[in-house]
Image 1 (spheres, rainbow, N blue to C red):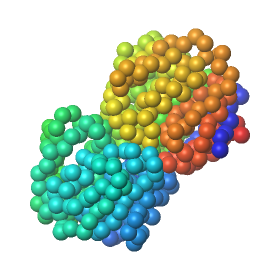
Image 2 (image 1 turned 90 degrees about the horizontal axis):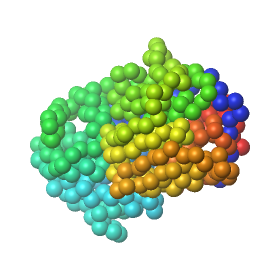
Image 3 (image 1 turned 180 degrees about the vertical axis):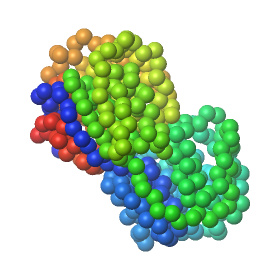
Image 4 (image 1 turned 90 degrees about the vertical axis):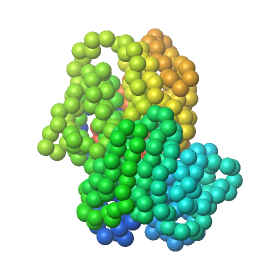
Amino acid sequence: MSILVSHSSKKINVSINLTTSKSESNRVLIIQKILNNSFKINNLSTSNDTKILIELLKSKRSVLDVGHAGTTMRFLTAFFASQQREVTITGSERMQQRPIKILVEALNQLGSTISYLKKNGFPPIKINKSEKLIGGEIELDGSVSSQYISALLLVAPTFKNGLTINFIGKIVSKPYIKMTINIMHYFGADVTWQGNKISVKNTIYQPKNFSIEADWSAASYWYSIAALAANVSIEIIGLKENSLQGDSYVVELYKFFGVETTFTENGIRITKTNKIDKKYIPEVNFEDFPDLAQTFAVTAAALNFSVKLTGLSTLRIKETDRVYALQKELTNCGFKVAIKNDDLIIYPSKNISLVENRIINTYSDHRMAMAFAPLALFFPITINDEEVVGKSYPNFWEDLNVAGFDIV
């Protein structure tokens, strides 16, 4: 299925009850399961990824299919390895192309017995029943995915000897690891992070009710809308200034485009100034907030900025190769974009008005659909596979409709 998205006035005045964070939800769900559901989670995400995690944590089946849900794949691998349960975990065709070797090798070093059922280093995997993991000290490559690290950390308090992770090389997506650690601290875990070492002591999580915050990653699409609109006042309910989420950096990031944020009692209000000093940004590194890269790239291209996006290596192994997908779809819209190694370079464009039939392929990637949708403020745009937004923001199209977008 595909939809045609447009906006007649370029004026946005709206209040949005934003979808809640699947990143927070999925982490707290693992701890809730470890504690045998002995506390309440308020405002759980309604995203497909969270629904899948809830279903599979309850399931008694021996074969579990995570579909496209990468976080669910990584979190369940560590969780079931720590629970001495024999289970096979599989996923979609794309999931079976996404590496999991680093996590599996770490768990096997800690005492689990996990094997690959098809290609070495990739799902599907079989977790064989083994003795309770005693934990210990391991080395881990932190440059591939923070989800491996978070998966291990969440279950580490159950290890007899706790867990010490010594990182090799640089660590990517640090804010996501900090989110995991802060949530663990909330439930009483003893976790320290110093330099290239994280240590978790054997402790018992303490049950405490938890309220999930609105999703800053989802808010980024409204920042893009604000940047591209002619006149804007957007209220987003549910966001916090002192957030657990690293993607709250979008507040600073979109100052490049004249977007301003005011924190209110209920969330934030977004407005904009048309005073942009320059349309040349030498470089922005997305290593710590990769989920903002697609949205930022589309905004920069639409506003005719010149910028290099770096720190994108982890985007190669997401729902799609996001670096390639961005370059291809932006080029199809008439923008001038190049790839150099893992960097994306956006150049000023003069011919975007010549492109009439703008069709965006989403590559089964929710963030491709939502990152490109704000372009409808400039010209009608067709987005293929629109239901993919359900992975993280199920009400996205409905919220756009409330903001005056026409969706056919």
